[in-house]
Length: 140
Image (cartoon, rainbow, N blue to C red; front, side):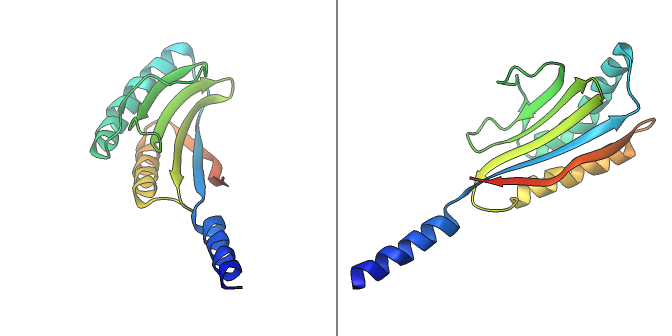
């Protein structure tokens, strides 16, 4: 009987505490842009984002997916890493902020990066943004 109780306790702990979480936030920058304006925005975003991302250990990288229209991508290179990317879509430029990590919810580091990047987006001249996916989390 004691073995069964220990097994049940370990099963509950395993199911509730040993999950992985995928966090994903998306922001659409408006208005829609011409090709020249996308290049100008890419430069603005790089100048604005790079100091923030480097402070948090993210560096310019090459995305390992085959997503089309990528204008910038930063990653910390870890298996459970944070990624920040920008891509040009038919609706406009979309900024993706993702994080896959063990545990539940958002990590403090991810939350801080999101907060700083959103403040930077708010301060961009001639652009506004729409949050497309607020606090999307998939627990695995």
